[in-house]
Each structure stands twice: as C-alpha cells, then as structure tokens.
Image (cartoon, rainbow, N blue to C red):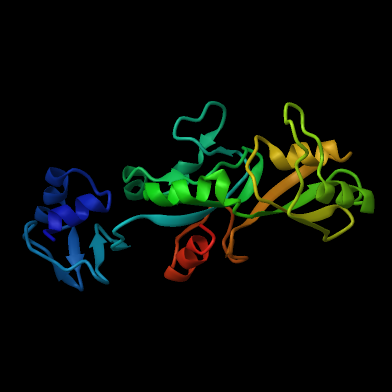
Length: 235
C-alpha cells in the first residue's frame, strides 16, 4: 500500500496532509527516513514513526480504555468531558465508537472500535453477553439482597422482573454482579429495587475480556489477538 494511504488509514490526516508529513521528513520506518509518499509498503507488522510517535499499523482499531469518573461516553457531551478526549488524535480521527455506554460516574472497561460488525455483535441484546461489575453499596450486603438480585427485581416501566446472572458478596459493602442485558442505569436500578444504593460502580469485564489490573484510570491499550478472541467467542 502507498505510504500516504497508510498514513491516512491510521488517522494522520487527508492524503494531502499525509504526503506533507512525508515530504517534511516526519515519517520514519525501520529507522529509515521516508521521502516518497507514494512508496509501497507491506502493512504486516508495519510500525510507523510519525513525528516521534511510534505507531503500529492496525487495519481496524480495537482498543480498551479504563474510563474514569467525570467523563461522558459521547462525541458531543452535554455536561462533562468526552471520554474520547483521552485517546490520541489519530484514533479519534478514525471515528471509533464505544460498544455500549458507561454513566458519567461509572468507571472501568470500555471497548472502542471502528468495526461496525463487532459493535453490532457485542451490542445486540440477543447475544446476552455477560458484563461484570464491582459494586460498592451504601448499606451493608445482606443475604436477602443477593437473593433478590438473583431471583429478579421489578424495575419501573419494565414488564418483567430483571435478574442478575450471578451475584456474590466481596466485602461488607461490596458485590461482584454480572448482568446479561443493558437496560438504562440497570445496575443502579436493580440495587435500588432490592433495597440498597450504589455508591460506586466499576465494570471489570465484558464477556471473557477483563480489564487489566495494571491499567490506570484514563489509560488505554490496543486489544491483542487474544483479547479479540475472548470477545468474539462470546459474540
């Protein structure tokens, strides 16, 4: 593929802008300065150096972010900053979208991609892909609370009770809760219907893909092939 097209595909601008990057001596591959924007390169295992930024080639963008409190999962946020501001400009330029949403005050695993098919597969309610949360409660965890969540609680405007796929106490005020649907404010509403209140909420897994313990809040990473396999085996 021609170098200017490669750069464009990675979000570094229009073809004209990418040709300018090359002609201004800002693109290096394998330690060699690139001077011809039309030179052909194989994209397999290709690593670009664009103005000092090391950039492995990805035909499609698949990444995770550890969402902090205070960010909206929206390209046009209304009340808080956009979670997309935490990403490098080239990734944002590729038009990545979040698979599902997290509330402004919810933290944890958020998956983003420019692969529309994967977005549909993971988001489809028919798939019932499990999502795992760490929940901090206002009041102590009681056996009756867990029993109610597993049996199903009634939510306002929902015709049928909604049950957790699994639920276990992890501390005096904490739960590990798994759901397989994605209703509005679902975890908070379920906990409220069961007689308690959510003080903090963190998503730690989607399907078999888990948020790494080492990823700081606000951090992001490309998904590995193993990560994608963990997602796709659920989809």
